[in-house]
Each structure stands twice: as structure tokens, then as C-alpha cells.
Image 1 (cartoon, rainbow, N blue to C red):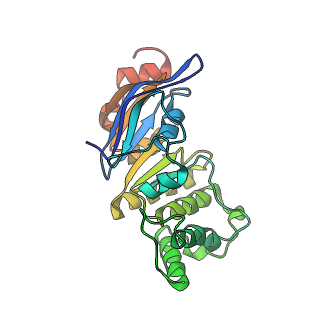
Image 2: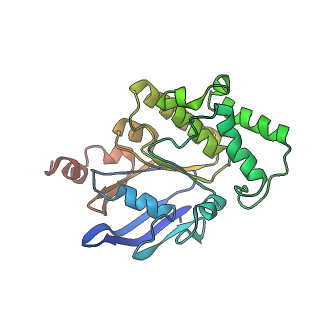
Length: 251
């Protein structure tokens, strides 16, 4: 069994079948990509994974516990962090001030690390924030106001804010959307470093196939809310069902 298990998930919005009998198993310490054409059900599935949506039927289990019906706080307590399509940072704060938010919040218990409150002093928390910024190569920008940064640096900061909480699962919703190619490549390099240095599982939704094939260990292809194929990147390339889903005709 994987650290993340989706079993027979169905979700309808009125007459629209957004997800139909979705089964997904994400192995621990791997990167699993979920791809598919627009309207395939990727975002609906991601929202089920973080408890934002409750499936009509089926189950979503993370590390042996159901995520269904849990609050965002409870999801975070379980060890799940999510990076959104649009970077969620505070533009009127500096990079360091943004980093200190999850650090200090964790100390008072609202973001307790997997249920364990931090007993670190203010100075130790600041050191921890600096170490995290150094890990993502942003320490030299710690006094910069985040609103003035590139989208790539905003994304890097947001990931640092997630990673300082030491999550078991990092969910990435199109992390390179709207980026220049240089920022995209930098994001790929950062995620590769994260995979190498940390015991962490990554699930990613992404349209950029360069990103997907650079990072993923396994790929699930959705079409019209139903999984078509799950396989390695090497076997997904050129798969006739994948070509049919994207191109509208069998190869």
C-alpha cells in the first residue's frame, strides 16, 4: 500500500461526472504526477486529496488515516502541505517575514509539527527560517519584499514555507504555471534537490510535460474524470490511450 490511497472515488456536480471510480496509489518517497487534458478532473481530485471536497462515494487515506471531512488545520497536522497554482505569500512582507509565519505559528501550536508543539526560542526559530531559505537558495533575498520578486522566486518562497513544516506529503498544483522557462527549470532543479535530500512524497498536477517527465516516478493519466493509464514516464510516452486523450484520436 502507498502512503496515499484513493479507492473508488466518485464525484458529481449536478449532471456532471467529475470523477468516476478513481483509484490511485502513491508510493512513499516518490513523485507521482497526475496529468490529463483540461476538464479531466485533476483539480477535483486534488481538492479531494486535501479534504476540500468530499467524494460522493469512495475513500481517501493518507498514512492510514482518512482525510475526508477534515479541516485545513487537521490536514496540515497530518503532514500534508499544498502549493497552489498562484503563489500564496504576503506581498507586503519581506521574504524572511513570510518565512517566520509558519515557524512562529508552529511554536504556538496552530501548525504543530505532526501534533508536536515546538519549544524552540525566537532566535532558534529565526535560525531555522534562515536555514530553510539557504536550502532553497534564497538567503540572499531574505530582506527583499516578496511582491517585487519573480513568479519563480515567489514559488520558491512558498515551497520553503511549506517545507519548514517538514511535511510527509507535498501537493503541487501546476507549480510552474505562468513561469518563464528559466524559472521553470529552476523549479525543476529545486524539486529534484528536495526529493534527494528529504524523506518526502510529492504529488503533482502539471500541464508542462517537460516538468512531468523530469520529476515523476509514476504518472496517472485522467480523461473525463476516469484514469486511463498509470505507468512509468518511459511507458507513458507515446502510449496510444494518452495520445487519444490529448489529441482526440487514436494514434
